[in-house]
Length: 403
Ligand SMILES: [Zn+2]
Image (cartoon, rainbow, N blue to C red; front, side, top):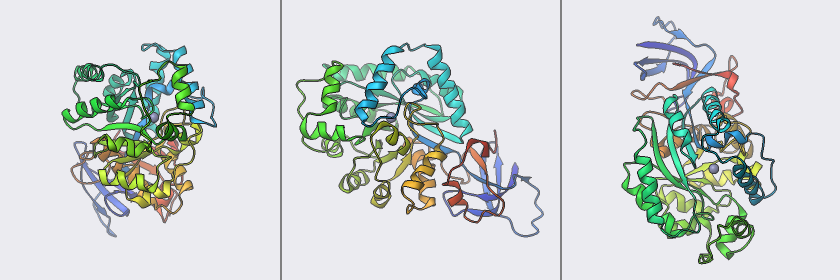
């Protein structure tokens, strides 16, 4: 058993503890508390640091890491999407060494930034093995796209077969994720829902209410998404617009539930957020990506006022400058200064862990959980450690308590 002393413990499950101690045995947390004056118990002195749970990056696309600095900021989301489609057509090979080495670098960056768990979206499953070999835990979501599709059940049966052929591991699970309402046909949403419901608990994920063009397509059947889909040969002439917003659209087909991570929500109204809360769906916000893609500023204060569970993602390096969840938190803090620092830290840890199905081991410092903890350098005599942690932490300040 090893005992550590730190200026601050930030357990998330409880108030921060000044002058804290923590014991770890065989990689698991045993106990924690506040040191009393003249406490003679020896321990490893970590100094002026805040010890907290490793963070959860609930939405990223590791396999897009090779696009870092190659996609310019866009004024409209479909403008950004056209750049991505063009780049991926240039370099589509699954085994491209540049793509694979960028995934390795991205995983290393996640670890340097204090991330313990990821929700990773992939079209190729290439990151799965790399995650299995890394210390990161998480869910690999195989993203399904298909707006014009004949036999959705066959496609999904095949996908489930592929997933079940992946090696079983404790710390990385695989699931399915429909891409978005504008790129997945209604019958395909239904097939995915059925398939995920049959799997032992795994979450599901969807990009939802991310951009105004998505809202326009669902309300009117027209607009920039229709043009883009026609240009790439993916438009489905039999599809008719439901005439409702994205959240109601998926709820009407029974897709919203407590397994789902709804990613972005830039265009969600308060009524939409209330609906997510009722269904137990977790909202994942990625504000830096939203700024880069032209999706705009998410209504972050509404997210938190609604009572919906909010998790945080960096999104991919095709729309985000780095994979640092602390930087994403600092952006949220700047957008919504009235949201408490404690709430933002819960979003960066336990809410993501719960949504991904990893809260038994991750997301808080509590006896019995894994000791995947980070020590973040804080200035001496820091008074409000939570405020400090949400104001921007860079990787140079972060190390793992038990590497
Ligand atoms: Zn995404």
